[in-house]
Image (cartoon, rainbow, N blue to C red; front, top):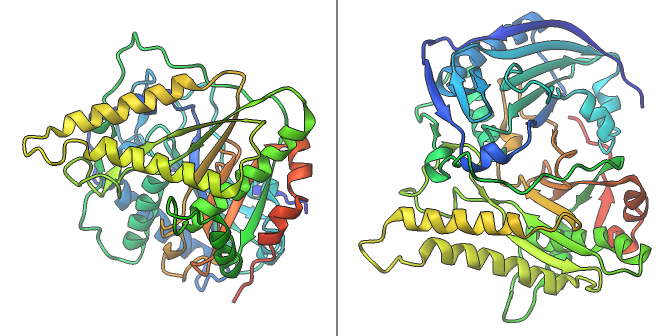
Length: 434
């Protein structure tokens, strides 16, 4: 399906309580991350008021929310700090020449979704806004709100906290808990002498497809993935991840007789895993842990075996956190240092020749609760799938999972027709409206 997008207006939204005028230091891993946005787009199938009223409410409440999340109204300075100068976020109003129902009938069309999301100019990261909101009106009464925040400041959990705080303001309620920009406290900034491993550039053309795992199929997959005493009950995320990795790597195993190394990472949100004395629940930043699994094309990556290895990485992280828990004089800085050292070690172990597969779970982040006053979204899609090979999101029913998978085009042609995958998942069906 083709779609044209007309930009109607652009406006800078500043915090309604300005003059923060302070500097936020980027953390060790903020500095390492590429210049990009972490984004989500929320689709709504009804707008009871006029467009002007809707836009006015969103703009005013966004201004209020920026007073709490004030670094998002600033600008990156010299790649290592955020100048909290209240310069503002960008608010764009646009109109699509298609019906929302047309979009919802083609939910697996990632190219269509990407047209609705803004992309920063990596050539000059000091000038692009750290937050960009785009409101798109469709030919019918439907509309969408695309929210893009700098990945230098936010991870997916941070984006969820920001948007949910914004919805409270839009409905006239103040958020009583202020967010804490604590990433540089947990992951102290790097010394300028530290050299990070180079980020690999993927020059091959990629393609993104989404697949839905229904609750019944998830239960069957969990049963298959459970592994005796080691993993008596696999989780839905472990099971789906193991299946996707097995099917994603099949193409690489079949195309060459040479042994290929696979580097697999699965993003772990640290907030629910560490004590609040380590990390506040309202902490904003890239507060994740990236364990590393190293495999080769000689390994068929059986699902039970992979789930067992994924579970082990969780246990290893728990050990890093609780190693000295019985010592009443435990210094939380020791645990932080262990986590930082482990992260750096994993990053340095990734061979430039390795095929990298990254999995990020956005499940349990309440994206379907983003209600600005016109009801819950009928569909939510991530906007960063071109930088991550798998993003897992809750389906609207809260039980299923939607997997957004990005692969080189030649690999995707084989992956999307994989018989083993299609036993449990279906390419995203039409999203039902009310």
